[in-house]
Length: 274
Image (cartoon, rainbow, N blue to C red; front, side, top):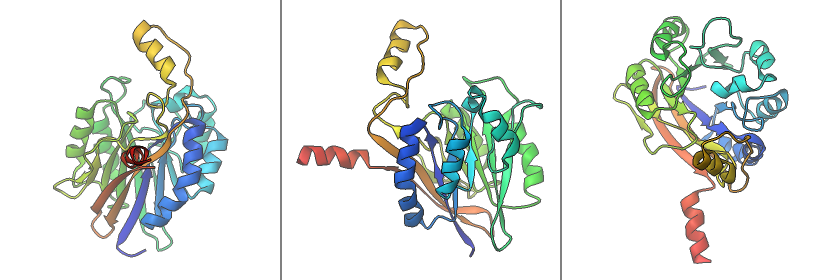
């Protein structure tokens, strides 16, 4: 590896539609961006809730190096043994002690260089877990002794909390990539001190849905204000993510580019033209 590292981060995979879309499009994205490290958020990969060995095996076979998760990983009891045994899968660091799994992990390249993937979870509109800002400070003391190259998956609901974390970590990590809301934001940038940032990387899955949920079910939940069983949406599958290029000698990012494929705007214009 030279001093430039190309990282591909794929946003939250939702169910079988998201897995199928990833299988179809990820190889081309790896080739397009000459990606040397592939990170995927897989917390919704099994029917919208958690991960099983099936999805884990398929994602690693596709060339994924590290899988991040989030709050929904705990909704699937099949996920807990995976978190306990697989060091290439992380969950948010700031859950209380006693929960299984790692909050950060390292990938070592052939030349001995390392990169760390750290996951944190926000608290606004979510669980009242430990402070993600203090957890980040605590973890970075140990991580920075090993590597300058650090990718943070900040799994949070509130955009303000995500933006605040970006400013908090700017210059101390290579990238802060937001996950959880499933809607890609248009604010990918390099912050003043060299950290790449995006508020939310978006969803990989069925866009003929409400963030992955069947439209009819989502409308019933919202209009009638009572619970309805989760049902996976389907149709109009797309993959969302970012490509980040890191200068490994400094740990700073040189580039961040967001994408959603197939491109929605392009497909709409093609429909009008036909």
